[in-house]
Length: 153
Image 1 (cartoon, rainbow, N blue to C red):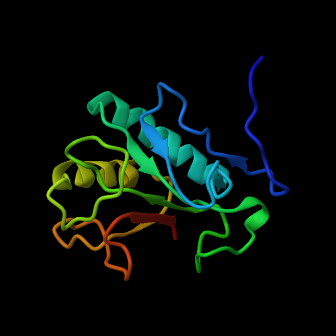
Image 2 (cartoon, rainbow, N blue to C red):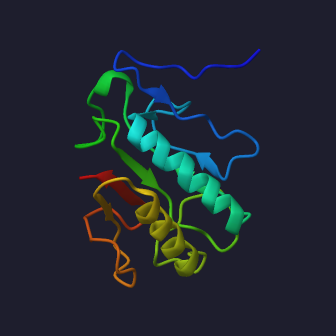
Image 3 (cartoon, helix red, strand yellow):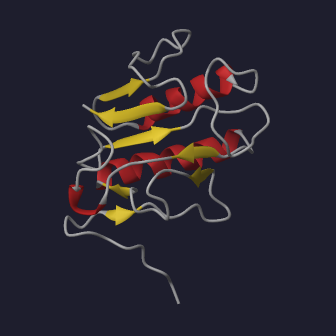
């Protein structure tokens, strides 16, 4: 039987929790997808980026917090509308673990490629916050050394 992803009162579905063939893995708090309810625009963007990424790289990228069900406020000042997502930078070793842009395991080229794919597939204006100033398509924001924040704006 086909499993249908849970949805909230806004009719936002939870991001599929990293199917085996997916080009992404999931992380975030609270876990189990509880903070991964996405607006249809964001869901479409993540899945389009995932498909493109999977054609160019065998490593998976990490998808973190999006939104709690029904837009309930949690430990973020943002992430209420389902139009924002946190993504981990790429690691050279492919491990599904945090990395900052200061670490030896950080893969600048792959992270920049992933960010460029997000920009290319966005339908509308997209803002990406990340503190690696070597990537021109991002803006700095406090506490964004270990993930980049993608939002429709």
